[in-house]
Image (cartoon, rainbow, N blue to C red; front, side):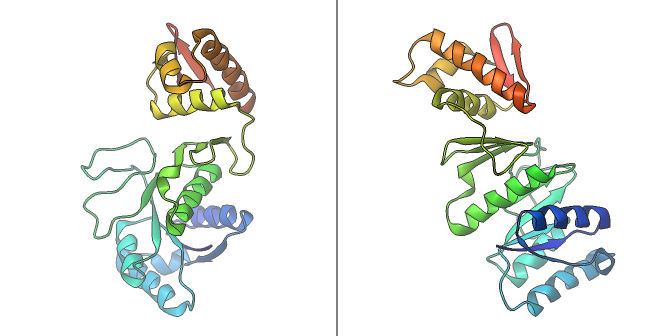
Length: 233
């Protein structure tokens, strides 16, 4: 997997390169000093694509114009835009989940809101890698340092390699809570969404919530309870 990093902040560029190199990705980075302004930055991106013999899979950039430059140079490249605010097509801000960005010369496949952790960055790269391979970005759900692999039914927190030891029921409950996007969810909804035909008793779902809560706390993630309802931020 070949990645291009075109980020104009030197400290941020080096931090991204370090995280990607540690994850064993093949990384090419443009020196921030070569991208002091929008025009030279776009030309620097175009020049890298022209110079490289092999195509890039993903480009990590920090400006809409660099998305356009990367797409113009190689239409097949997937782009991850780093932005102070993630935007949907209608211009409303989001809380940092994968989203399309409006009114740009070219649309990035995903945006990642600053600040972010190494884990969140690597999760987005993995998501775009799946898109590049044809698996689709919809097989992953990312909320900060928490990542759900929907295809393989696994959850990761502060890691992209070591899955949390969740039971089938615990995973279903967690996915329901994550999909709620910060909304409190009651036992009835959890039972309906996570129970299906194999867990029909409220007591089993309640115990599943309690055991999931213990595992999340052990991992450093808090499940909030209010008036018999639950949420994970």
